[in-house]
Image (cartoon, rainbow, N blue to C red):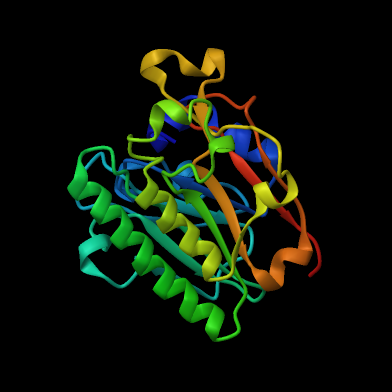
Length: 248
């Protein structure tokens, strides 16, 4: 979102009413709940859960859902990560939903290691749900493009965070655990991006990266009707991604 308060001023709630999704997950809210308007805290027809960073104006995620989760868990159960306000886990009848803003490794090698450790901890938690027989849906800014098709300039970015071999290997572990990249599964040859560098005007030339994902556990894969990236929606350096599941 690049700030939920800024997004509200740009018409986020109108957009949310227009798409009429059952669940809306947002990342990089950059706000604590006590800084938000009543309309943003509880949009009409939605329950809400927020994870906020201890540091003001940093990170943060929020999940809005028409059906109230049986249980909402803030964080991954590890203080090393949870003070950054990156995770909301929502337990529904049908699946467990992870809404995550994964760390960015662009601030140096130590942040790449932090990011990879976060990946590992996430997989431990999600894997435990799957081993217990629960269906899992994961969405958020993963901050890594997996394949060359997922960014406009792969060769120029092989030594940059977001496309480093170790980051891509860390993301490959998601698939080893049985998670499916829904967009790439449905659209194996389509080059479409979800993030553009605002400092360079990259969006106008579509020089972007696909770093926002919906993953599902293998048992949900047959129920995936559509997964898309909505490049026509403005308002941030990212655009929304969506998942449509069939069945009940």
